[in-house]
Image (tube, rainbow, N blue to C red; front, side, top):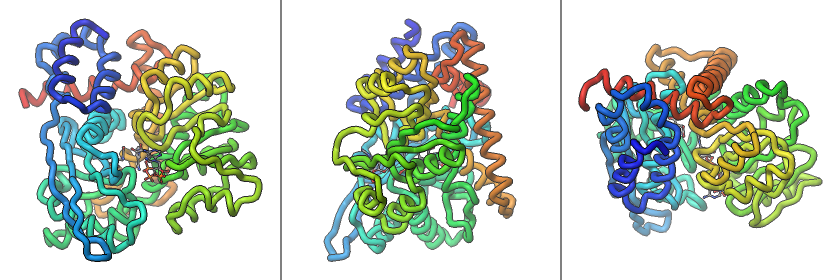
Length: 445
Ligand code: NDP
Ligand code: 2IT
């Protein structure tokens, strides 16, 4: 790391003790930014990095709710409004038992750069709760969401902060959250949340957007080496919103997706994952991957283990942070890997990213490769602002243009700063310069 940034990094780590995922995200960005500060001394003079690492506002609140048996539970709710230089805070809500401030801050920090790369007018934020939705009835989920929004509503708004989904938060939860916001405020403010149902202000393509966008980004990387998805053997982690649509898109481009996973294990299906069956089990029945293997002839389920033991030419990690470590990366490389695009946020550890770079693997970091979800959220906000709704084809075309644009900007920025082919450098510098310029233009805030 550039020696001018080391002291700033040390201060950030010391000010935020115990938040290891946030530290990891900050260090990874700082490692790219040395050359920017050679060209832009004004960023150091204006203490841009010090300001960028301190969220503009952090909200932590109690979320009490009752289960179906009438027992009272208390969870913790978070919203970190990280940076509004480019637009209202924008980013998802995650409901998962592992959520604590360090996870919300890593996600919010990444979101600043990701949102800048989309070229849309959106700042960065993130939120969520340590609530575990697993095994909860619809009525329990609804009561939790209503309680969560009963505090959150006072902090958000179309021009202030616009949450959406993430792990454990999909269309059902956004519905309950929107209903409660409307009830408390007496405003049909469509633009306050994205990922809404299509009949009440949602956008076509938003459910598919992250997974589709990740595959479009990967396809652009493959093109730089004269390759495509056609005939690739793809391994995907996760089996949620992002994974399902990444699988569908990769297969529509001629690839065979031979494996996917959940937190209990993974399935191998050499014939190619049956997306409709997977979608039905996961989204309609809210079941487990063991069900998939039980119903699909030829597929096998492995309990525990690592999906990265399955060999493939393209890997799409679409589950969660730090799910792909240095050993897994080395194994993938020795098994014939050529490309990785991150559908999840920070799924590869720093060691894994080093392994990929040293082996000359095409590597698309999450803040670039999974930006299609939030970009389509911004398209949903545009439709809401103009009280319009666009066709699937038009919206998908916009998503494709945005993803190709992000790919090309990352590649051009990496070239410009002397790191050709390094999409991590391209994404970090590309996102950072845009936000830094806007922060300086807006004065000391
Ligand atoms: P979902 O809740 O729909 O699916 C999450 C998937 O990841 C499930 O298969 C889940 O398995 C698995 N998973 C979650 N946590 C863990 C864990 N700790 N260990 C192992 N597996 C885990 O979430 P999404 O598909 O929406 O999100 C997946 C990733 O994509 C996240 O990193 C998210 O931040 C990122 N992302 C999401 C976007 C979106 O628009 N939804 C946009 C950009 C990025 P199980 O069911 O067993 O828990
Ligand atoms: O990580 C992400 O970009 C998301 N979970 C989507 C955020 C959004 O506002 O659509």
